[in-house]
Length: 72
Ligand code: FES
Image (spheres, rainbow, N blue to C red):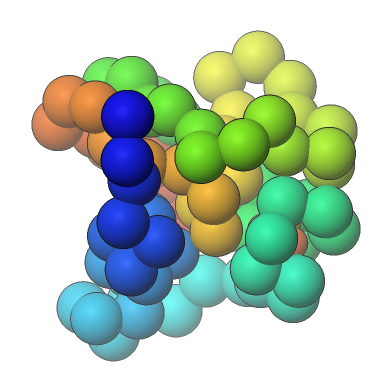
């Protein structure tokens, strides 16, 4: 499946002027890690940064349903 990189969750947050942490924007650093409280996402490629249960990396994930996230 083709995923448009402009439509990852981090870019969506930025378009809505929602402040969130990030650094590498490529799944390496983990700075964009946040809690996924509802819904599902998929990744354009498997991220290298650690993610725990119910956590996502916004820079490289794409919603596959309506989602709710908690940003620290
Ligand atoms: S910004 Fe580095 S993993 Fe997302």
